[in-house]
Length: 427
Image 1 (cartoon, rainbow, N blue to C red):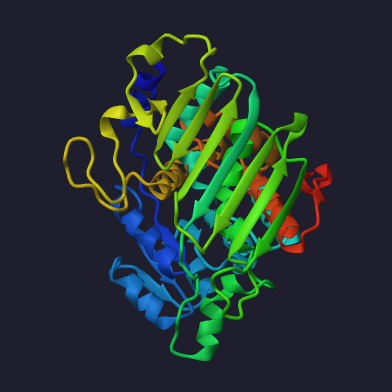
Image 2 (cartoon, helix red, strand yellow):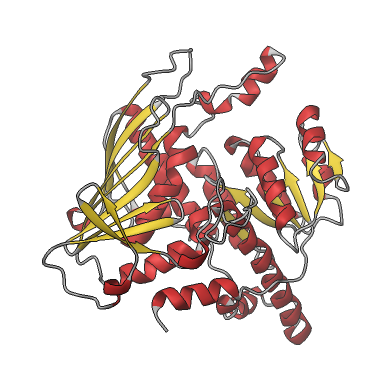
């Protein structure tokens, strides 16, 4: 069986785990996207919703009409029907909510970045580490995407040769500013434009692509310098709308990354350059561009090829027969639900499944060995890794957050930052 066939088989045989009752904290535009995505999963009933803003809570309730509604997140956490929570609040509000959720015995999915401060991100990660009976997942959606794991296997075979560099971008002409009926509410809803609260374009957007690069490189950054400016949206905001960063990895390998709200050309993608081939990733699709002197791999002779200007790309897909997007139809011509086949869908699917695996593992351990040896419990649960869908745990989430916060610091201050190992140490 070829690598593509193996990946497609694994994708089509994912088991359906027992239901997990969800509470969603934060019902803004992203929270509503989460609720809509949970609705198309067969085992993820939303039983409770929480938001301090009444209109958001009522609007989200239309997608989960049977869910209890709370204005205070403590009340949702005290709801015994809620087994797991998804924290979709603004980044600077994650910390206390996540720590309280773990303290009340809830499994937690926390959007990335974990926090807008390194200190609080560390507190979140340590709280998850100290709660082995509970499953924690960070919202780094690429880490649960089967297409990414297919590409990772491809990379690890050495098909692109020695790593040279990477280039990535996210371009979308949008202001980020939202209107509200009162000045107070407008300040609240536009927290991303406040430099005291926001992690900026790097933290709120770039974290996902930068984490993917570090993951593919299998290395942690060692330094960064960058630039930032406000080009398009001169409306009093304190957060730049255009950012460029040069991120240095060991052995002289670099990532050139830029993100802007001032132009939409060429959207978002990543390109990885090796001595034998380049790899371009756009959404759920990827292509390999071989060097003329690259060795013949064999399988690429029969692979689908597409022309990009003067280059020929070899299509790389974990499931070439079922390519779908959130806006179009799949190869079969069937209608595609906007919530399926997206990175968020795969991340939440992983969270539901892994929570079920974790929950059953804890129950089996306690039944067999008792409840007074947390170190043995951690070892027992680690043996269940093969039953889980790959995703980002607290360690990956913390490392990605630290990386994003420090890159944001460099681009905003204009001063180079050298990464220190102690920043990543959770003890």
